[in-house]
Length: 251
Image 1 (cartoon, rainbow, N blue to C red):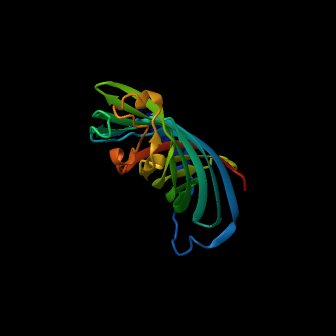
Image 2 (cartoon, helix red, strand yellow; image 1 turned 90 degrees about the vertical axis):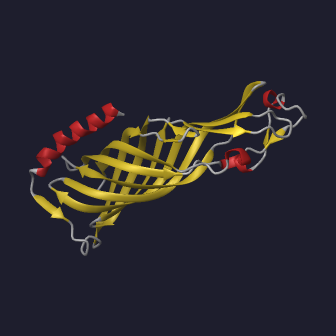
C-alpha cells in the first residue's frame, strides 16, 4: 500500500503542476452549477488499493489491490452521475467462540470471504476547476458482495470446513478527487474514497446442512446447524480505497 500511495503522489505532482499553471476558472458558483448543459459521458477503467481494518480480535480484513470500471454521464454544469463495479481479492475473516451445543463440542468458528465485489451508483459534484483539472466530491450507495466464503469449525476433537453461500450487504461511500484532461478525450482520475459496509451475512439466517466431515464431530447425530446465533450481526467496516483511473471522454 505504501508503494501505491507514493506512486499516486508522484503522478499527481507531475501532472497537476503544469495544469494548475493554466488559466484558472476557480470555485464553481453553486447557484449556477446545476444549470443544464449538453449531455456528457465518460468511460473509465481504474486500479488501486483498498485498506484493511481490524475490529478487535474477531473481525479482520486485509489490505489488497483492486480494479474496476466506471461509466459517468451528466447534463448539468456541476453535477454528474456514475455507475461502477469494483473487484478486490481482499479477504475478510470473522472469528467467534462456539459453546458446546446439540452434541457439538465447544470450539471456534471462522467465517472467511475470499474476495470482494462492489456495484455502486454515485453523484459527482464539481467544486472547482483549475485549467484542465476538475475537483469534486462524490457520495454514493451500492452493494458489497462477499464471495468464495467458507466456514471452519475448530474443536478439540478436530476441525472441518464447508463452503457457504456468498453474502450481500448495503454499502455507502464518500469520495473526493480530481479529474485531469491533458487531451480532449483522454484524461485521468485520482480518487480517494471511504466505503462503509456491513458483513453481508447472507444465507446465515437459515440452517445449513452439515457435510459429513463436520457432522462427524457431533455426538448426537445432528445434521444441520444455524450459524446466525454464532456470528450475530457482522460489524460494519470502513475501508479506504485509493484509485488511479484512465478516462475516455465519449462526448
